[in-house]
Each structure stands twice: as structure tokens, then as C-alpha cells.
Length: 107
Image 1 (cartoon, rainbow, N blue to C red):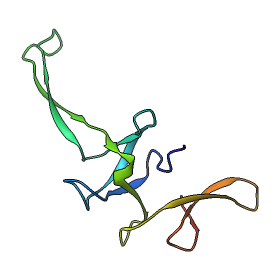
Image 2 (cartoon, rainbow, N blue to C red):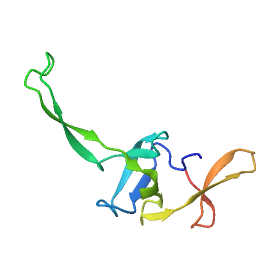
Image 3 (cartoon, rainbow, N blue to C red):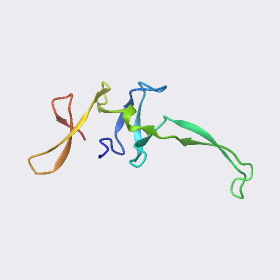
Image 4 (spheres, rainbow, N blue to C red):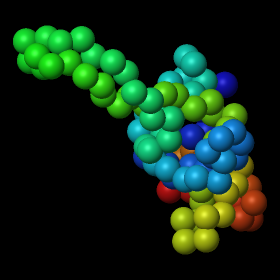
């Protein structure tokens, strides 16, 4: 099944600890059925000392969020979310449609 959320989309978390927050999708991981969302799922990883980083320390990494917890934000001004469908337009090109907003095309 294809992921209906693409890299660069604005999404809203609909369940979990971060529910209600929005962010931009940095990367979609289809094998894990998850996505990396900017500012959400940040964890710290301990880094060993190396020649480039002699002190070592901590760095922040993104932890993937399941696609089932994400909803596409169609109207960013009001934060309106919608499910996504696909259809062919007049040119014969496949486009994404927002189901809640009378099948309006999603950019």
C-alpha cells in the first residue's frame, strides 16, 4: 500500500504524547510504515569520543512516528486535517485529493 503522506507535507499528530502538535515530514520510511517529523520524536543518543569529537557527548536524533498517528494538514491557516484520496485530473495525471474538503487537490 502506498503511503499517502509524502516528504515535505505538514502533518498533525492525532494520538500519543504529542497529540495536537504539527510538523513537517522530513522523511518517510515505507518499510517501517513510519515517518520522521521535524521537532517530534527527538531523543538523545550518547556518542563515543572520536578524533573528530574528542569529548564525545550527546546528540539529538529523530525517532520515527507511525503513519497511523499522522493526519495530513490541508489548510495550514486553520490547521484543518483530512484523509487523502487519489484521482486522475483532466490531463490524465494522478493527483492527491483532500476528502473532507470536497475533494480539493492537495499540493
